[in-house]
Image (cartoon, rainbow over all chains, first blue to last red; front, side, top):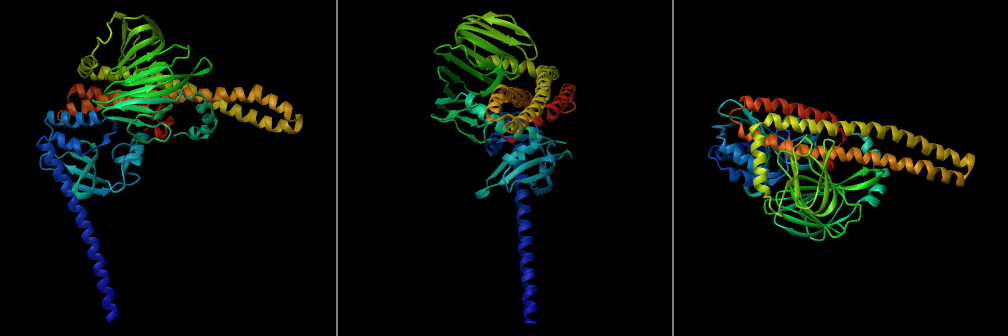
Length: 154
Length: 339
């Protein structure tokens, strides 16, 4: 009887750990969404630039010059782009087939294999206009977030 | 990516080692990086680095790199993408200094008759001069200015000879323009390039059409060299087998003679074909990445809140054609290290 109770408690403990991990990951993804929305809505292009990896992926294009990544965010902001109260719709870790979410091409496949590191998350955000965007976000130490790619709005 | 690329690495490696001209990094300043063609790794350029064929040097807005290639001094100016390439020409291998974006200044201590060619998205230049500057604009256009000596600029089958104090501009997919007089260091790259960006964004559909025509030329070259390469590879395999069989039938001496006279020259021709195939594929990749791709990203950010604007829609339709052509004809000939 005692051992049965022990096993049950172990199972519950494992489940609690799993739920906790999932919930932590979800809150990290939501924090990424909120941070991105705040930065783009408030026009903080320089902050977005400092959070961006080089090379960076925009749709199917690999942006391999740091100046061009900067130019991308700054022009986006100058164009008046915002996402309003964006919400996180889907989030999952990058896998071997995730490149297809951006473009099913040799280049994008290679970009993911070569430059997108383990632990990077693919986030789908729904913007205030109902359109969606994709972000590639890597959570680093001390809450630092690195954006590796942007697709959309679509 | 084609297995033929892997299959002929062994064949090529010996030739590459012989023909590649090592280039020393002699000075760096500001933000710089090198994408090493051999392994695809990226690292800052550092004094003492030795660069080889396939290596790509990038400089940031404050970056500067100087290279020494046995009597040729190259100054890679800020905001430039420069690649050391190689291609076959007249039966031998020729170095190619490729400027995808930005500007470089070249100074030859002495001319040997084996000077590398200079390649931009829109033209090729044969150097018989000792000091010149090459500008590569955001729209794929080029400007060559000669300080001393002579330079021959070729594009779309037309050639212009430049003497000291002369320059010429070449638009993508067009023959060279008229020569003009240019003073040393008179051209400011930034203002010249700003004008290119302005005209490019004024007619993005026209710009991408011109680039698609250029890409089509590369695609045709790749297809032609690939077909010849496949044919020669097959013949080479047959001749090698013949040489193996010959040892038993005719002895080692006759086989050696056969290998020297038939197999080795065929092997060289085959490797030259592959070199030209790769040269064209990499030139197309460079044009896509640093000209067409940059145009796409710029247009996307400019029109992000008005995607249905007719100007952007027209550009988008033509860009799709550009991408399709690239995917079908160029991408299969690239390897991960290129990207």
